[in-house]
Amino acid sequence: MFLISCLLICYLIRIARLYYRSYWSVQRLSAIPQPPIDGYMTGHGKTLNKWKKENKMLELWINWHNTYGDTFVFYISTRPIMWTADPAILKEITTDLRHYRKFDGLPNRSLYGQRLVGTESILSGNGLSWALKRKVMSQFFAKVNMEELFYKCKPHMEETELSRWKKVIGSGKKIELHDQLAITFTSYLMVMGFHNFMGSEKIAKNVYKILEALPKQLNSWLSFLCSEAKDETVKMIHEMRTEAKRAVMASNKKKNVLKRRGEKPSTTNMLGFLIDANNQTVSGQKRSLDDTTIFTIDDIMTVCLVMDNMVKQISSLFMLLNDEPECQRKMFQELRETSIDTFEGLNSLKYTEQCILECLRLRPVLTRGTRTYNFKKEEECKFGGYIVNERSVRVVFSEYVLHHSPKYWEDPEKFNPERWYPGFVPEPFSYMPFFVGSRGCIGKHMAMMLMKLTLSVLARNFDMEQDFDPDNMPDFTQEFAVMRLKNNVDVWVQPHQPTEGC
Image 1 (cartoon, helix red, strand yellow):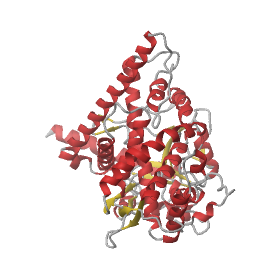
Image 2 (cartoon, helix red, strand yellow):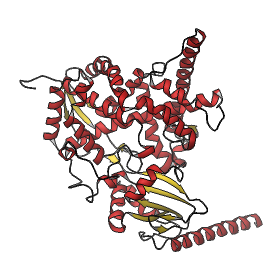
Image 3 (cartoon, helix red, strand yellow):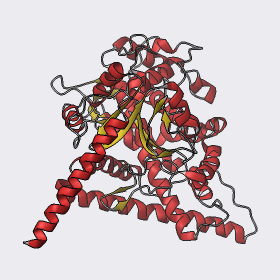
Image 4 (cartoon, rainbow, N blue to C red):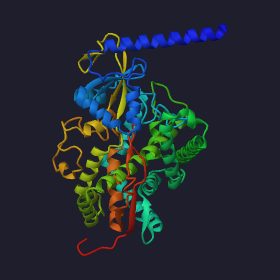
């Protein structure tokens, strides 16, 4: 009885401390605009959960932004979160790596205890090791190298992948677009040095399951913990990491053979660059062989996961084109009439590029981002002109809100590829589908090239028409930072029958 009383007293003291800390946090930040809280212990939790259940989280951000301005504070439980769409702050977030760090609490580090991409991958890392790694990888992803990569990927798409699509479709078939595109985009990895890795269909399936499980870990961790789906997902991660290790070891073995022959190994593919990037010296000390292998595996997992972003983008494009048949007709006409025998031909697909850019605006893969802002002791803790009185602040911003703001875009909810006329430049920090600055997406040039290449080959060989269920239209979930499709994007596909002038 005495023990129970002590535990109860400790619990009540803890609750009282949290309430006290939350109350004074609200008072300290009262000069900063903020929506009315639901309660000192819940912050804006009830409001956030309500809008999340209705799949309207992004609409809530837009409403708050329109009501409270570019910078305001809200609370998750008792923790204050700074929200901003201020261009000056966004510029600082994207350039000042001394203060801003990736938030280590995001769920892309591990899944149900199974290491996913770790904390030092090219996506999730911080500090010097990440900067050195990115410097090496930027050589592979540089815009000037896309021509060479195009000539490697083009025959693969026109032969291997086109044959697979023809086999799946036959004389005509309704397909789930995301599933087929996932295999296609994953298969490009085979051209980039991952031929010793598992097959593209297996990777695509595993990635889909893993990405499906990530929000479940966030939202219903306990109910999902003992489920078969959890065990299946952990098994998939383990399998992928084991296969990735074999690919790394095979690549290292090949390099060692060349060295023994007195030949200098040359790095020409993505896998080779990932291995080289993880062999960099960090803080004057060499990583151990085991560490280098583990971090390279983390990067391979990262690459596999982000390849799905291009899949979601093209699926989203077909969702948007469903309401704009004239835009779809013009895009397919350009794709069929433009030869892509050369890299210059691919770059001449201007209207297609405009459609992709507009899709990236309306349906960005990354709907929001978060950073941790750490102030130095001698500095005054200011954020957006406000005194924060916190040494460490979590900052949230939303690409989706910026892309839908009438402040920067005329008729922002309309799909209008023509707004991307030649020479058009958006307002700084109003368009960030690939983010910007030193942490901008390193693979953005590759993504644009692969999306245009894939669309071109498919359009020249197939007629594709949306076949959506009017009672269950394709949609995306707003509960996660990375866009996820809620249901299938069904498309009727049949071999293209050229008509005169097409």
